[in-house]
Length: 69
View 1 (tube, one colour):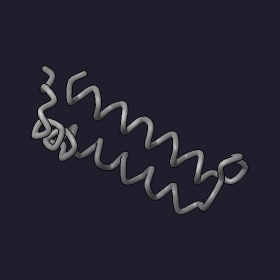
View 2 (cartoon, one colour; view 1 turned 180 degrees about the vertical axis):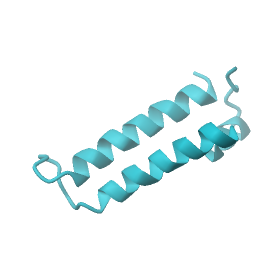
View 3 (cartoon, rainbow, N blue to C red; view 1 turned 90 degrees about the vertical axis):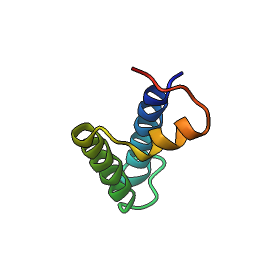
View 4 (cartoon, rainbow, N blue to C red; view 1 turned 90 degrees about the horizontal axis):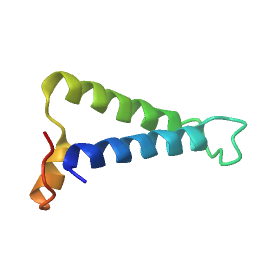
């Protein structure tokens, strides 16, 4: 997997997990504050789309994972 693929898998996983933890009625509900984490991930995805820079992708590249196209 390349860095951009890992970023998308992690972001999608974080969003689904935070929704499961933050939506009342979910069997995994903990607190509505988990929805703030969902918003944080969404804002970061939006920012990286406009600036073409993603901190996680940069860190993964420094760990030796190949960059995608």
